Amino acid sequence: MAQKAKSSAPQLIELFLEMMSAERGASVHTINAYRRDLELAHDYLKGFGKSLDTAGTGHLEALLAAWANEGLAASTSARKLSSLKQFYRYLQIENIRSDSPAQYITGPKQGRSLPKTLSEADVDRLFETASKSDGIRDHRLLCQLEILYAGGLRVSELVTLPLAATNRSDKVLYIRGKGDKERLVPLTDKAVDAIASWKTVREASLPDNPDIRARAARYLFPSRSKLGHVTRERFAQSLKDLAVKAGLDASKISPHVLRHAFATHLLAGGADLRSVQKLLGHADISTTQIYTHVLDERLKQLVHQKHPLSGK
Image 1 (tube, rainbow, N blue to C red):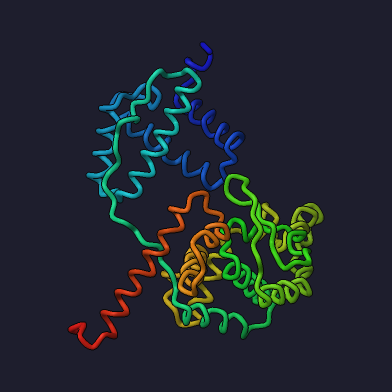
Image 2: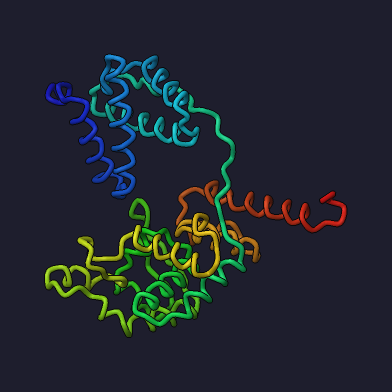
């Protein structure tokens, strides 16, 4: 116990991140976000003559005020405050601190930010454009699109799909998602066909290096990267390149926007909220409910643009 009390703030950050990874199954992406938030806060607090582990409530309030003066978005500031609260809660559990200086601090007020999405026509244009090319990477991208839009996967779930996950006879994918939670995602016939088509050329995408090849062979979308699979960044860039070819605004298109489109289009087609929650892998239905607000906004825009008495 005494040894923990002597640990420096950077060491405590590392211990906290190890706990988040080992005990809570946080992803690499989440761990990196916590690291950035906590290290930035520690650097700022040193300017106040304090350390992250010894700061008081007043110091954290001054920290948030400094970020606000620099123009930090309310949503970003709120996320950083959440990271701080979890860090101090960890220090309390480990008896390193008896209190949490962040416990009673409320974050900045945020307006409701609705997810960006695509119209069904825009999605059709993406698929139509993707299906016109016939190279190996084109086959891969079309397959990725079909799976993503058919099942609403997170991009990390898509790029790390094991090859074995596509061998089921019941046309569903077994997904191990956020926090190691498991779910089954049904596939459309088009997605099943796209997977079968990709498998006929997939082996040509395996790296030549025997060590990397052995690692990459287990993934549906193998790559020469050290991870063995196509990276999130590579897929996101491929999607933007496709958007440009399709004549769409690439800045408004990302893997997550396609996930939003999947959910919004399902609800617009009459799917119930609980089913969409299960398909997306949301732990709380309140997270899924945001898509009903997207539909409300689209309905308002439709009335404003098309109603003869809208006063256009």
